[in-house]
Image (cartoon, rainbow, N blue to C red; front, top):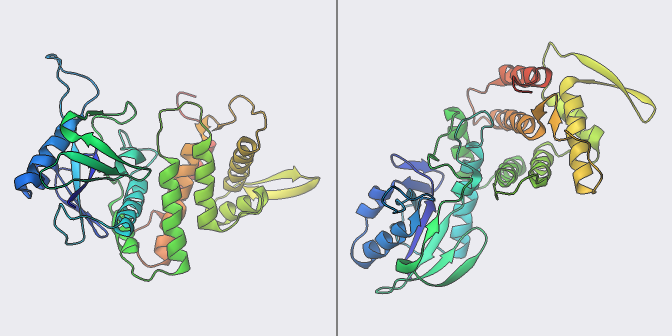
Length: 333
């Protein structure tokens, strides 16, 4: 049974490769198809539309990025295992796109693949995605509008080119080591932490981000274990050491470690249903989640450098920027 695998809402301007995948612009993908495959693809693309109508009352077509797996033809049917592999590599790519300081970034949702199977001569669909399998619709009668939380300008834009190259090499490793597997899993958890479901005041992203940290640092026993891990990994020569009393004992950590202690405490309070103080999701006026994202990405660069996959990490410069963020509240705070 033929299958078109694609990413709705995400735009690429030219063919892009990552791991075993090639991402193709809509027109490039359509140009490779003929006969009923092309007719079905045209109907499929027409079903994905922008949220707002134009002045004539019509909803413009939304971007669609086609996906090719390995050297297969574009309409090749993927096995369940192949589709899972596609989804996992896209999670890593999507995680790289979640730079917290990047304007108009494409949320993780843009990197969840859809697989539409169909029969020759038929316009009925069987949809596979990262979450469900469904079918029964006629694609010519279906209509999918862009979610409100996905910008109409969402595109594949990885700000750190060297990081993308290193991650590309990582997902291509046939027999990864334990550390390499843990890094991929950590990036997947970070991906899920950035999935936007249009809900407000949700604490789920904080829990998933802490899980990404846990996978990467392998320090899950307590706030102090996590705080010590972050204090050590994000240390700089100019660290300011701060002493606080924990359980009646003086504890000395740098600012990075005390931020981690606070972040872990906030995560635990949300998990265990404790009453949260106003502003608990903030640290010195900045989002705990944004600070955690910056710290996590620094750790990812460190791991890739240790694996000799990343040649130009930000290193101490990136950590110093993180420390500056901890010390200085944002302008609008």
